[in-house]
Image (tube, rainbow, N blue to C red; front, top):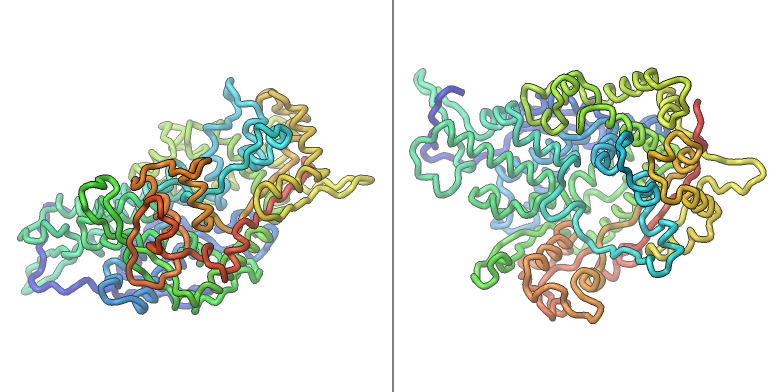
Length: 631
């Protein structure tokens, strides 16, 4: 870039979002992309998503489910833009998203999966859990203490909890966000994506050259300008901006986009020096909530490609009902200051309650009937177990066995944050994982019995373990329990013969660690079981949420009358759920009479005429027993 100087053009008009090209999509038709999006789409980092499947091994069971993270990311960008367009049609001019805000939301949607791992979520899960469970370490937690990580057993179904009334307490299903108020962390794919967004020079240069700045030639003289929307308000009067200024403005914009991607609600106050960040909380909700562009697109897209009908919904009514409200509250960092903070809530008009119910019902069916299909579940479990073992044989947090990682010992976070190492990340695709599967299978000793070898013998032949259906025994190899609440699920499991067999295996394991049962029939018995669990929603009706989150056994507030934590949890509930917006403005106050105040909108789960109000506790748990054997 050299030592360029940048100016704000006199009488500069507002940034206008213009379509530069189109991508043909079989879900939405022609999707328009802007100039900056077209440049980003051509970067190797984004092209890599062509080689990351949306559903991993699901296509081995649903053969047409062959779509990838590339088309999904383009779809999320488009759906986010459509959500913004319909919100703008339904709100007053002072609440409308500007073109520059729309462009930022589109970029967050486009880049939200740029940090995604190969083969859907299985490799990601291996990275997230490897500190807790790694073959090869001397100290090891007893197997019965990490059943959730090992075979997916929900904690409330641990045999020791069911058998010991004093130890058995069902967890409070309080609605906190997916991670916490500051968003996804560590090895979550969104956190990896944020690291790429804020550190990659190709993305940074593209944003500078195609969005923040532009050049004009007049009488043979080129002048470079900076768009005022990307300059903090207090610096607008400067006549000339340096390269360092532009780099700083770009860094702040990329930090904001990264914060939207991970769902960091805390970042809003930091970013509000920039005009484009005034509606930050609404931007996050469009990309990161229970009814966001990501959820809508993958439900529509997975259904389209898999051949199922679970993605069907009245999308036109849903979109046309989107709206937004102002949300005012005290500064809970300094409650005595009198300072008021303005946030925004994205929600729906009352007429969309049925559409949202339909969305939750179809998502529930899509997960329980397709994602948790018995053979999809087995394939993903096999891949996850192999990946966790494979990670222990590379450098800590390494990208498996890539040469860059072997030679320099760089871990995944190092590689995605270093331009000189990004080629290793570009190779980290589905094809790389499949190559690793075949190579690792050949490395394993032919003489040693090894669970991984048995898994690989089938994965390399694209085949899952079969259900363990034994002759002259009741067929209890595939059991599902659907009920309202964990207590009912636990009660049903107690009388299940498959669960009784699982409990006997746990009794045999006793206090043995994973290392002690490795390569034994006991390990094989343990890993023959697989649990899957899915619930309708993370939301709870207001009164139940309030009691579970903030009241002690005597009904008194656990926190002070007006605390930041109290506000955060209630704002979480609203921003991660689907509010029913009937007013332009709401004012939040947290005190002893909170439930009696009509100061916040209802969520769908609070609405008596919504199906979700009566089915929010619906929970399904599958328990499968597989035959662990080579192909």
